[in-house]
Length: 214
Image (spheres, rainbow, N blue to C red):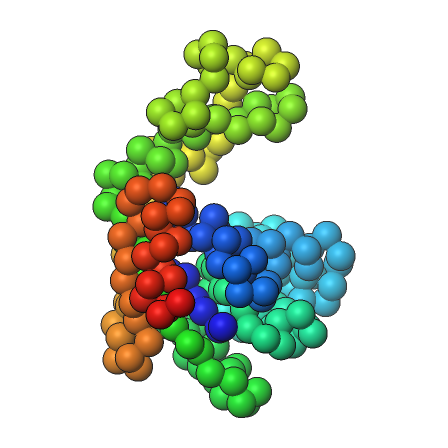
């Protein structure tokens, strides 16, 4: 199974990628994880990426692509992979197409997890983090027993800057402008399936497996 998960931030792609990767016995390839690994290991491509990040700009598509290529060349990805966070624009979509072509591989499906923007805002802006022990909460779905305080250690909970409404609104704009055009890209190739991202994790997983005819 070689699968791409698409969708706005907060759609639950990472959670679904973990579940599907375990089901199909293939790795969950997250660009966020790849960046962290290569930066931590100080790999050549990681040092290139660091140069962009230190300047506060997006990492170049070809650098991200090389990280992904190196990852899918590992032995555990021979049976397939679940891509999460890549491609994020049309240029990366074309890069991935060429990457697979030269390896004589093919993409099975691109699944778009569809979640309305108001739900995305609620999901992300409701997140809270304990800076002391790392516990995570959500003010609606998994609130602490005492408002604003960690159940484990009693520390004051914080909202990450990335989870603030103004930041999420910007991220949604970037998704609409850069990533949403990939839906047409994969639709033209008869690879796109769209499922609702509303409901429980199990419900969304069942929808994805249904469109994959599993």
